[in-house]
Amino acid sequence: MDVRAWDDPLLVSVLKGQNVKGERHHRGKREVLHEPVVVVEARVQKLKEENKFRELSRYLRAVRSDNKVQLRSMKDHVPFYLCKAGDYFGAMNCFFASSSQTCCVACRLSPAHFVMYMKTLVTGRMPAGSDPILSTQWEAAKDSNLPKKSDVIKCALRIMNWNITVFMDQYPRQALLLLVTQALIDRITYRRMMTFLSVVMAFKENAWALRWLYNGLGPETLHVFMSVLLDDLYSERNTHFTRKFELSDEQYIGDFLCYHIQDPRPMTYGTKRYVFDVLHKNWHERDYLWQYYLRMILQQCSHELEPETHRFLDAIKRRNY
Image 1 (tube, rainbow, N blue to C red):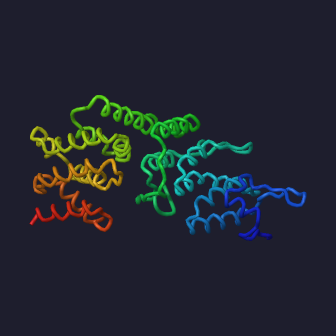
Image 2: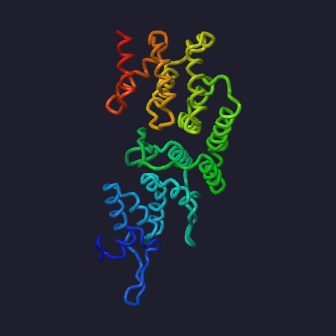
Image 3: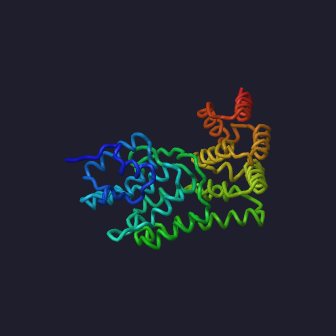
């Protein structure tokens, strides 16, 4: 079997993004990047092991093979690899790219893959491990700008328009949740809702959507949101409600507050200082179990904390002794 070397001019031009079609004319002859499927599988595995996801995406989009079914199965993972490379916009466009021989990736997405992609596009985090559906661990993808929420919503609705299986399984759950979340952002921003604890708890089963809502708030609105949320958590009028929290509710609140505290965006610095101050003044883990979980989460990732967060952690640890 004649296999192209990795330094083959046509293959190199494809991997570098200089040749998107996998074709060239050399000495008057048309040359096509056509390889046996076993070779394609081997190249895919090697590029994955080297974390060269952008090159892998370019290769799969250009290569051809006699085993069209198996090749198509590998090509269906291109949006995933583009997300791994931080190219979220490219991934969304790739869902709908089609050829004369096959329909688009969106047509073949399973409901589980649809949910995985929507969470990735919203949070910038991806499932770790070899199987993105079975994985329970999520990790940050390569640094890149996330797409606008309106673009993600359009992408989700467009996928459901192409894929009846996803539509029947997910609508109105995921798409409607995205629309409702965007509506909540608008309502919080322009109408100043007066209580947020119930809003936060409503997203318990879809924490990724809560983070999307959070990331959609401007600096002033975010300050109002966190201020009112803390008031809700500490207010006497909510004491009865707080005592009815289940253990998972306490963990969920602690996790969300930790998400805010670890938010690296400069626009959050003023709000975080306010949150640190309120939390420190009202730190009573015996009364508020979510405080315990917040402290435990911060301790587990203490090596990643910013200096101000370290000082806050040291201060609340002293309150327990």
